[in-house]
Length: 256
Image (cartoon, rainbow, N blue to C red; front, side):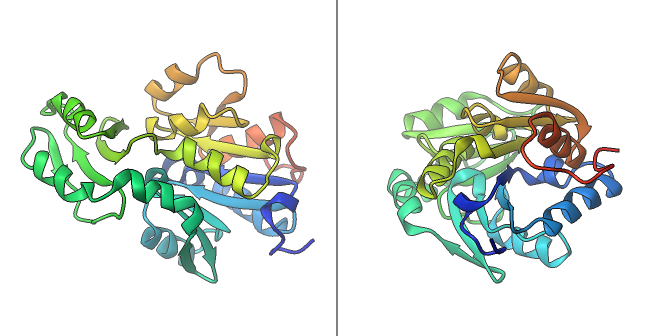
């Protein structure tokens, strides 16, 4: 089996959030995780499931982070193959997202212009509108306004406010991605640390809330048997969950 083998043929697929998760933990912990992935590309698949956009992913990986084979970006509204550093959206997985969003961007920006506690982020995403949130000034009527437009609002880490197509987020997009590629669900580990990862951790796949996770996320996943709540921060928590569930052999000392 080669590095380019389909994900369905790989022994293990890591579907991971970035900030605080894959990028979290000490330098040594990240190096252990990244080296382990690179040393086992024939048997490990890597998918980024992130609120970040494709441009950020390209810049990140050019800086030394392992390249994923695929990315579910923009809080689940982008589903793309990563090929030689190029981000190539998968039309058959994105068509439903595009239809659910329509031309909502301009309507959302107009409706929430000047709304207390929200500052529009400068990037114009394809199928989402995102704001920085000031929790002390925020008026939560914005949530009802978004719902009345037939869209979903998502608050995460008490500092981000995303407007998404109805029913679209990291979890549903990951489930559709896994089914599309014929990947056995028991060989996928979903990893996250904030509320925008909740739908991914609740999706029923093996999952881990890494150490240092947002307390609101921990409260929501408490008692879910398929979710391992790790003590290791960020990258260390991912390796901890792989060992706990015996999902792939780890090198000696990988969790030290």
